[in-house]
Length: 311
Length: 210
Image 1 (cartoon, each protein chain N blue to C red):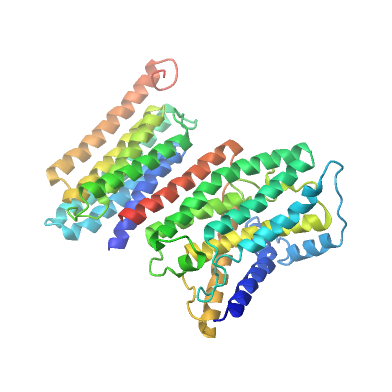
Image 2: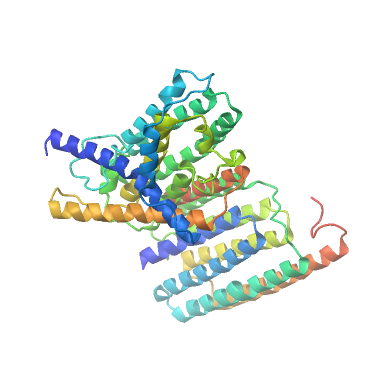
């Protein structure tokens, strides 16, 4: 395959993941509503909210600086960029040679700017949210890195997304499953999901991620919201494509490609459904219990390493 | 079969770590019961490799019956009699004890593979998993304040010992296994009664002051 084709493939995947992100979020919302015996919003509600926000004007609090206006663009760009570092459907012709660690740290860049913007408005709640978000991130990051490195240890090279996804034949060994579970717990923490943060709450004292976005409005709020949704979809896609690469196609053959695209969609929405189940069955942890939760995830990741080496 | 075995071994260590990370006494007792069932399953998996498979069948039945049913019931009864409603009290907090357990697990597998890395083990990885379970059980014992939780830690260590002997020699002689199982049952009953007596005699709590 020529470079142009591979580049087109990579960019179209990034665009597609970004486009489908509000749908994934809407799917989780509808499923949660069904668990509570409510009808829930329509699946397209995310797109409608974004469309509404796009026609509204940006309002800025008096103390904000240029950083505040820059942050939504940075976080959205970083989330979209991260989605181009690993293949979701076919690992054959992949243009980007970025590894999965790059994806994690590009996402961390977006989080850094969001946290700064939360502080920039000089409101108490934004600062509270930023401080909590950064402390959770500091705990979640090492677990994610260990989980990725466990996978990379089998390849013997840098954790290149395409190479990792191509490692077949080891699927559903105990260590891969353990690493996937550890990464799933990290995804819950990173995406501000229930045991760590409640995405549906509007009670300022318990908010983490939403608190940082309180001062945003209009197009900037749309960008920030979309960035969070894209980040969630990228992390779920990473879990589906790299940690559980069953059904991922190797060749450029159209039939095989369609099959692996269907398998990927099924895995993505299956994981989203799992998020909804977890959110509906588990209570939010107190903030000071979050280290226990992520500590258990770290234990699983280290156990995955041991299982890979010894069993 | 090997894949099933490796799943079971990892599950054994993971349950021990779950007990370490859980805050509720009743949950950790139930987790111990589940761990005993998994241990029984490992004995069943190991049975075809042994010269006397029926010994291992008996071991599996003993493990499931005594440590999967009788001991947890005795402990749950003790919890009810002692009217323990609080969370577990910790001396070492959960993240630190998880770090200790992680280091212990890594070390256990390292030592096991260094010492018996050349295929002398009867079950691959069982010695390492057993030693890791023993160490995690030790951390459970060290980090908790209440007597019942320390009993749970002791029982987890005992499961680890059985697992390690399974890995090395496909189990101890049958008469020893039966003796150990009865010993554990009697010891748990005595400890449960002791805990009850102590809580009746002492003015505060169920254990000695820290």
